[in-house]
Length: 202
Picture (tube, rainbow, N blue to C red):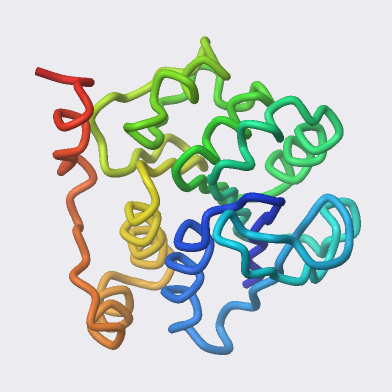
């Protein structure tokens, strides 16, 4: 299988590398490709740079397409060329997942209209404003609706990635990867204390 992870200036490191570390546990069963609007190095919000393997336009056909969040999403929601490229790639990919405010980018494409989705709880109002026709779920660690999976803030993407691995390769495989990483996998998509912490639910 091929997994494409989008990166853009100001992406959140854990949004990208938490899920990718879980998929890396599948070894030669998944090939990971770093995607960008253009070729070259891309700086994360923390500074370290990652090199784009392929542009969104030139990427191979994917089985999984992931869109992370980060402070850069505030800029990229207004990038019409990127949003169009994300839409085209998402339409052509069987499994599409967002981490944190990456949901805002996907919401801007219109593909989440009428779809249940969630996002970072600290940035919930802003992200939800990028897609007023999305059925935003205030309390959820992650949400699956059809081919779309959307996760809450930052670390939630790792739990969502393991849930997708369980779906595609079996729960024993997913648990084995979590155990190998010494990661406590939260299997419950409704277990979201951060919604209350950020005033989204009573």
